[in-house]
Amino acid sequence: MNPKKQDIRALSKEELMAVFTAQGNKAFRGKQVYEWLWKKGAHRFEEMSNLSKQTREFLENEFSINHIAVDSMQRSQDGTIKNAIRLHDGLIVESVLIPTPKRTTACVSSQVGCSLDCKFCATARLKRMRNLNPDEIYDQVLAIDKQSRLYHNRKLTNIVFMGMGEPLMNYNNVLKAIEKITSKEGLAMSPKRIVVSTSGIPKMIKKMAQDGVKFNLAVSLHSAIDEIRSQIMPFNETFPLIDLRKALEFWYAKTKRQITYEYVVWEGVNDSTKDILALIEFCKFAPSKVNLIEYNPIEGGDFQQAKPDVIDNYVRMLEAKNITVTVRRSRGKDIDAACGQLANKS
Image 1 (cartoon, rainbow, N blue to C red):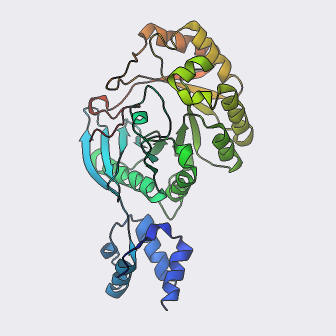
Image 2: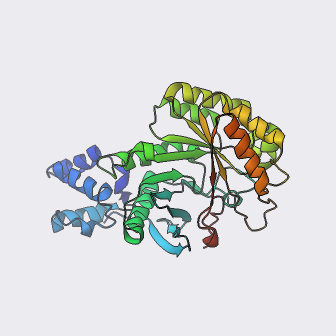
Image 3: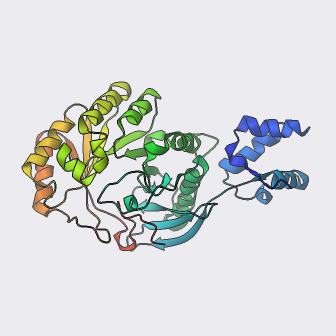
């Protein structure tokens, strides 16, 4: 028995086929195993019922399947489900199922902890331990799809990379996961139903555009004034708004796709007319929409949700300039599953 088994999901379909031909077996066995791993989501070789016992024993001796496990699950009063996901090395990340009358969305994590330092986010208080592998991201989606079918009687419809971590700091693995999620040999989901949310890494936004990705882009903006954004998102000093804007201009020139800005309004931080005018100006260079997101308090946090009349001012002034704006009410607050609250309390 091999003491250092390779994770079989690190192999491509072609590499799996080569494993079997090297054993004097037929190449199509590799295709069968690949289908079990990705389309059927098998977590154990013994599940692969159309393979001989001898073949399953060979796979068991040579390879591992480093699958995730739902360590604990919490259900909110509004139907939201938060999962504590245990990885093969014992580390934990969180993912969330968000149901609405017309859709079910998976909010998935891309890193254990986070590389960035946003002051309003509970995840930012956790040091980044490692990036998630493509299969670990894929498994989160698969688990939430099963929960959606079980608890809401419908398949998963949408995916947002808005869980723990900065997706663009784990770029290659995120793209590989999305490739599997959208493949006919995987979950066959449309890339148009996937949103990758970034705090704003200019060179990686440009790389996405150059790579011709088909999914949608959201930017966690929260202020269009450098001084204020640097106070709440200190990495803005390294990636200032002018660089972010140039990257987003490049994104739109390449993709012709609308940009979504995620924007939380806090009392005494970004609740003035000056803040609204700066946001309007920032939205002008490319078609965009603004999601005004309800703030979700975190333990020991100093931020307070802005008054309703301030939110009304944002909506009124943005709409007056023909900028699409939506006020998003948070889901799952009672189980700390809302935006910015994922902190591995489990």
